[in-house]
Length: 138
Image (cartoon, rainbow, N blue to C red; front, side, top):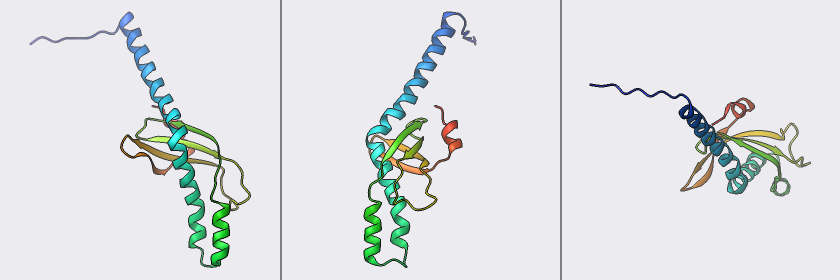
């Protein structure tokens, strides 16, 4: 039985490094560009729901007060959106435009984990953090 060894030296090593860098760049830009369309809409609706859930559960408010508060929080504007990682586990950094209707202490910079499927599109995977965002490379 003979053994075949591969040596990556010279032009083979350069070709391999260029291919790996090109693949990594493609995956990184793919996540960023894909989040700007449907992914942005999914995040906006998730953030609106995140803001409205405590209002709807509050029993101290009247129905009219709840409706007014929910309408004030029905639109959220994303100022900046940055995504990192592969499409099956994207960590997203979202910076929201300030809104006087936001509750006190609501952070304008938020991190989320998203997942993309060709069948259902973008879905929310869970909360993220600044650490997971900066560590999510390729």
